[in-house]
Image 1 (cartoon, each protein chain N blue to C red):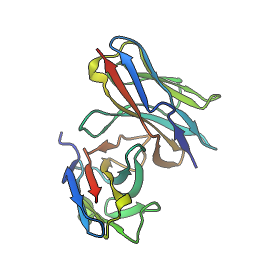
Image 2 (cartoon, rainbow over the protein chains, first blue to last red):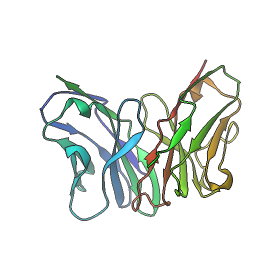
Image 3 (tube, each protein chain N blue to C red):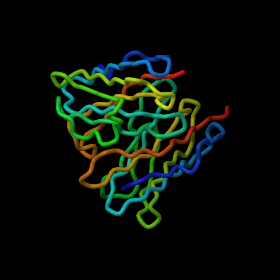
Image 4 (spheres, rainbow over the protein chains, first blue to last red):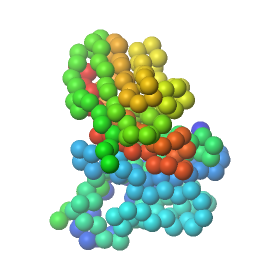
Length: 113
Length: 116
């Protein structure tokens, strides 16, 4: 069975600074990988997903993530954050052929003005 | 486009009472999911419907939880009787079809349940 580890439960970052949110996964088969964002008082929203092809995936709101198979990682990055990026971010994985999302525990991103 | 609607937004009940949550998915979405999100954890899939049939309910505690999706549209999730450990946010999501790789799952705002 697949699993996801988000090592950082909280990440404070100054406004306009870069940020990286870490995600590692475990699976015995090939996977699809996702990042979701949950803004305060809102539902989960898909940021980006990796299915195949280029390992660098671009998503909404200037976010991107890089799939690294050897390190079983899918870290999320943004070169310059804004106050509006304050939210909780969830990494998720699903195996090929078993398309049920397994979520990590989430990382709360706090932007410091 | 209207999103996934859930009600109520908040609910406080005493242990051993029963509670029901309602979800109205996006129009035309065949697949509907219920997730449980306990504080400090990621969402965990409880049950997945395709139209009005159950695809996966392997993680649903069937001794106390039940769910139905009549007519393949709206869905209700019920807990009877509730336990303290059921305190969580219950998320409903819908997608066009089963394959999350081909389609996007849209989530509602959730219902926050507190059992005291």
